[in-house]
Image 1 (cartoon, one colour):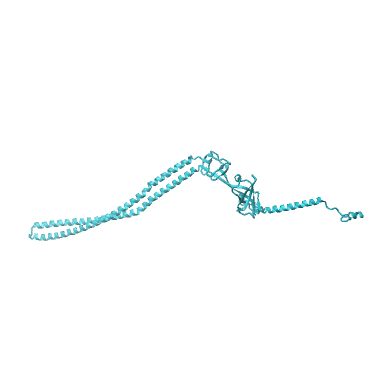
Image 2: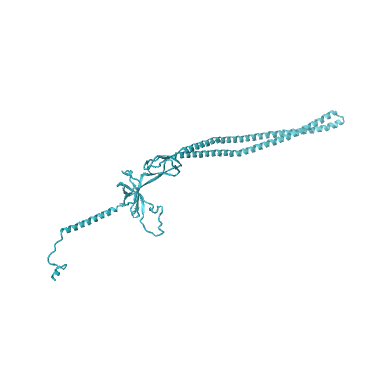
Length: 409
């Protein structure tokens, strides 16, 4: 029993226990120091991580411009190759120009012909105008002449009528003399010869009356004839006055039509010259050739892509951040862009925020209303722009992987 009591836990034997060793205290201190260091480091890392958002789903992007043929024809020369730098305005390939040179010559000839037709038609307007004015003036003059002729004919008709009246009066007097002389001759109071002379005079005056009457009839017909001529001249004046503007309009319309033909021919000539110029295929922008799809002898068609050029002077970064990471990202925030290929960091900034997620703008966007739905954190493409005048920017190429950090604080 005494032995059990001595060995029982918590039973004091009256002998003091030895203090813990110094090595044990050192171990405890080391553990505490490590915990404190980890805690401090974790706090500082957590604080640091709150100052930026980063992603490894990012790459360098650029405009990829296509150089296409604008006309058809066989390729006779190719001046650039893949990975070769080109400048805006540089001739990268050439199409055989012979056919288009012939088209230009034909179009120029048609243009010259149409201009000659205009030169032929243009004077007819002035000729028609002058002819119409002359016809109007002639008709007006004919009317005035006819009116004067009517006046003269009416005056002659009045004279003839007066002469008729005079002849009729003389004839009446002669008949009266014949009757008186006949009675005297029957009584032998006058010689028979006097009577016979009075009869002859009466017959002569009767003929004079007939002649005067015929003259009156002729003068009346002449007046009617002059009036008919004036009426004809007036009708001619009316016709010329009405038709002259129409004829002039027709001539002017013909000239306008020929001038339109000239403009159409000029446009065809310019089009042919443009087509001839398009036989030299020119780079629209500066960059590096990434694809070449043409060889000498190929017959190309309008719109056919011949080259693809990467515009490396205008690069940016497409960073696909998770939608949960966009809460603190704003336009204009500074960014650090690490390029995997070089291990080099570049300065930049947030240029723009996306309008939609990548899935929405994909070729086959998901339809969450059909079938089973699994929620997936979406990514949105944020565009980052490099700061200018940094060493090494000229080495960047589209498609390179980068890891950007957007400093949100």
